[in-house]
Amino acid sequence: MSLLAVGLSHRSAPHALLERAALSTERTGKLLADLAASPNVHEAAALATCNRIEVYAGVDKFHAAVTEITELLCSHTGVEPGELTQHLYVHYDNRAVQHLFTVACGLDSMVVGEPQILGQIRTALATAQDHGTAGRALNDAMQQALRVGKRAHSETGLDRAGQSVVSVALDAAYQALDGDGPNDLRVLIIGAGSMAALAAASLNRAGVRHMVVANRTEERAEHLAAQYGGVAVPMAEIVPALGEADLVVACTGAPGHVITGEMLNRAAHSHPVALVDLALPRDVDPAVRELAGVHVVDLERVAEDGSAQAAGAAQEIAAVRDLVLDEVEAYAAAQRAEAVAPTVAALRVMAADVVRAELERLRGKTPALSDKDRAEVERTVRRVVDKLLHVPTVRVKQLAGAPGGSSYAEALRELFGLDPASVEAVSAANAAGTTNEVSA
Image 1 (cartoon, one colour):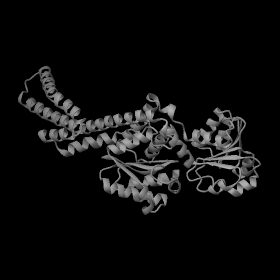
Image 2 (image 1 turned 90 degrees about the horizontal axis):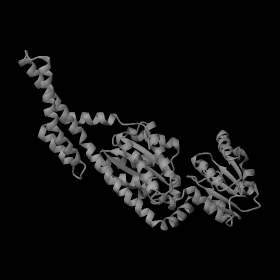
Image 3 (image 1 turned 90 degrees about the vertical axis):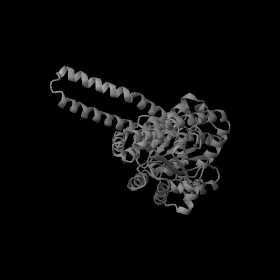
Image 4 (image 1 turned 45 degrees about the horizontal axis):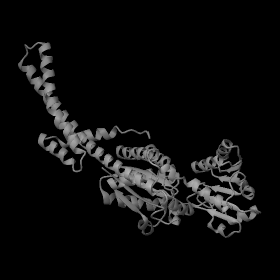
């Protein structure tokens, strides 16, 4: 089984299409259920963020799986196939692993090196595990991607070069407000999810003292506001709160616009206001850009600023790309070596059966042999067999790690006449023993 990645991101599709194709938590669950029911997909996970929608799958047949996944993406996003497919990218086998590791390091993000992607991959894996669609292949690949991402941040200068989407957006908002610092700004945060929490924490560290949080679930708004000495207001009171705010951060995940021009007109601003829209689909109606004194910072603006930031981090990015290539080769070698394990196990089972049968035959021919002598004979026979098998089984595992190493496992099966069914049984038992914990 090989890894397949099918998706679209800010690099392959316009923001308007990403907005229409955005997957809510509910739609992601339904997509996973349909993928699990597909005869061409054995395992599946969906990574849905503010700048990408990707499906990672364990498959045996490339073309059939790509077709099935593409059709399901169209069905669950509501985007017509002719429009969606021209923006999709497809990666298979080692290229899919390389893409996943690159994404985990933040090299494919709007803001290069942003660390939030690690949490999003962790969530994608946990969701797939909860839905029963993550097996051995996806667990191995995504757990390793998390470890590679951590390495990129701890062993290179990526952290010095990279900022989060939130921090880039907030910096742009400060500049839009004539470069005023955040200390005296009155801030309204609409939403109480992970992105809102990150924005609140960033604003608090920057010295913001006046923070209001609005959310459809008031308890969550109250919890987030209490962490940073702010106050919570119901969504019904958002217009008065807009009238008081200098800076608004919107990140709700609502299906429609949360802030409209009509609402801002009713808010009757007497001062400039910066609206930071971090939602996909958009929380802020694009038409509000036409209003005087209103500055909008959205994900498209973040992508532009992130590209400029990446241009100044060429050395750090090159170091991470080298790390990714090394990790992909190491992962591929480990997978190749692991693929030979069922053959080695089947060989040892066969050898154990031969030893058992011969010892039984010996028992029938030497009834007068004492128990002590019989035990010594059994130990000697087992040691001889173990020693004869040790070098070839260790060597075949080493050779299997090299490109083309699968041929050694095939040679071992042919030379010893191993039953393919016994090899498959061992492989299935190994796959059934996969972990369901996100450890990285």
